Amino acid sequence: MNILFVIPYTPSLIRTRSYNLIQSMLTLGHQVSLATLTESEADEKSAADLEKAGVQVIAVPHSKAKAMLNMVGVLPSRHPLQSAYSWNTALFAAIKAHIDAQPIDIVHVEHLRGAKFGQQLMQTMQAGQLRHVPVLWDSVDCISYLFQQSSKESRNLSKKLITAFELPRTRYSETNLVADFDHVITTSPIDKKALRELQPNGAEIDVIPNGVALDYFGETLNVEKLPQTIVLSGKMSYHANVTAALYLVNDVMPLVWQANPDIKVKIVGSSPTPQILALATEHPAHIEVTGFVDDLRPHLQSATVAAVPILYGAGSQFKVLEAMASRTAVVATDRATSALGVTSGEHLLISKSAQEFADNLLQLISNPTERDAIAANGYGYVSQAHDWINIAETLATVYGNVIEANA
Image 1: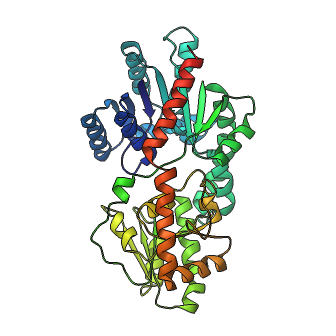
Image 2: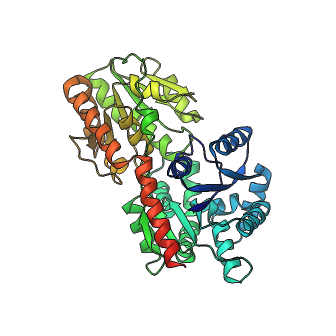
């Protein structure tokens, strides 16, 4: 197949889903082209790396000023700000020219941010101004479902207000989007259910879960296990991760420290907010905030336990998958694991309260035999259920069905 990915942000190792789907499609022998926007030198480097790997890349610069103007322009409307953020007429023109010049079999559009490109393509094709190619929308998550949770649960006031503002706009947009495309995919049954409730008469929806780079995270590094250390990873400016870190340190760890005051927490991830940085200042003997790291793997592999205390979210949590692939035992909230086919006590320990989370952390830290068994079972689970190549094979079957239905 000849697949055109339309991704509004340049796929990279930290934009995991699109990056690994593209790489896996190349591995499976498909032709892949990518239409994307670049906003930084890092984006340009990522685009160049994909081109070296065999992807035909169409990259258009997109400035922050342009993105801000886009968002201001939709303020009087019902459209969400983030759907306007990435709109770029130069990229849309390049996408149309590429479809005219290449034997594209299917267009794969990712996320709410990229949806307008897909909608405009569908309208152009329906008007007879461009040959018809099936267009699939990968919602990734149901964003309105995520914002509904965030508006109630976030511990960052500004993010709580922004998501509350965006929620009705996002719900309106996703209701239309599910009906606008030839096919829709998402990452979990929960997101599928939320999208289907918005638009029961829309396109068919398939679940294509997130995966994990097993060769990368599963590589055994020469790192020493740190004694009694809990690791929490993720981009530490993202509102759900900020809330998770605050919950872990302020709600869970006081209960842990009552039983064992020597346990430490390492918070690993880029762009920590002032709230996150303050945690290390308030608990200098117990909390380390690393900020950006070049390689997450040593931090996961050296930790005693990985904590994933997500209070709200959508889709599959990469933090759980990456820790499991690193053979590190995981303690998580039920929200963090709701999209996964895991069993508490076998693949990880699942917690429904701060007290249960603290008890589970203490249990694994004090019991190396159980901890090792949980880590091994977790690795076995991701190897079977979340290998990117297997996921890409499933997606290729979906592509084939969509192409056949639109022939």
